[in-house]
Image 1 (cartoon, rainbow, N blue to C red):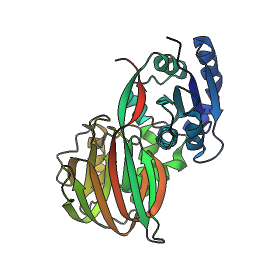
Image 2 (image 1 turned 45 degrees about the vertical axis):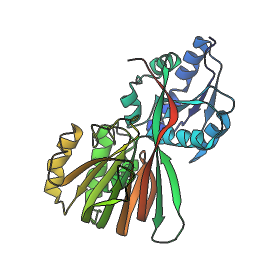
Image 3 (image 1 turned 180 degrees about the vertical axis):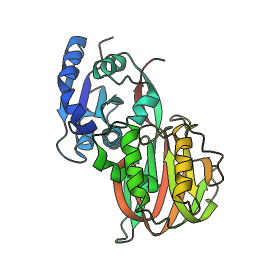
Image 4 (image 1 turned 90 degrees about the vertical axis):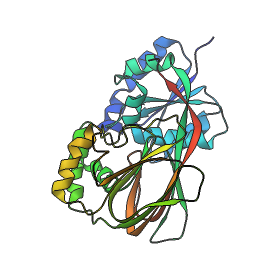
Amino acid sequence: MPPRSLAVILNPAAGNRRAGRARADLVAELEASGAPFEVLTTRRPNHAAVLARDAAARFDAVIAAGGDGTLQEVASGLLAAEGEAVLGVIPLGTGNDFARLLGVPEKPAEAVRALLGAGVVPIDAGIVRWREATDDFLHEAAFVNAVGIGFDALAAAEAARFKWFRGRSGYLAAVFRALRLWPQPHVEVRCTDDGAPGERIYDGPFFLAAVSNGTAVGGGFRLTPDARPDDGLLDLCLAAGPLTTLRVFQLLPKAIFGRHTNEPEVTMRRLRSVTLAVSGGAPIHADGEGLTRSATEVAVEVRPGALRMLRPAG
């Protein structure tokens, strides 16, 4: 069987420009493999989605070379395309949470070799829709790893200030800054896990809601430690109630290891969809990329098996 043809969509700014510095190593490994390939470089926000949509008709696999945000854009492009291309990832960002879940090696050359021999597995995708306080337009975005609403999204936005940190340390720095800014607004949360009308599971002040396909966000915070990307469901971690700064710092170390799930302020659910109505609005991120800072109505749902993804053996 001939090797897969690969479109590698490289975001040179990812990982504090680590991705751009890795280009030569990627090209050398791809040339040595003998596989047909093309490296496509992103030049602006959402450019990866446009490149992926075009590449889907010309290549067997479309590879996101960057961070979780690059993966989110490439996946969005493939979801909008009509081709049969599969999705892959070379982790060159700061967090790389979904690539870690899939077992993709961190070193670029090793990642290329692993993807060339990888199998194809179905992966769920997520869709988030929202309305903002300033308009009545229904916005929409796809995600692969997680959507964060509330403090999680505010911290993700603030993390852009700390891009030179690797992994969890940059997110921790952003957490300290975001704690001074988050007002803990009122939220009503309803979820659907069996096709029935949405059940109200919470009504009151809230801290964050992570709706996840993967196990971790922010470079290793295991907010949804039992999530599986191929079970046809999303996992919700809702941290609610008026949380003091002291209590936040008590919970954070637990969240790193996924040991927060039985704490009284935390609700964990596995569901098909969830809606949130937020008084005053809240920020949202999709795979670490900020979508808005003022969503008043948010709806998240799963698309089971919507993506076909390269997953290294083992």
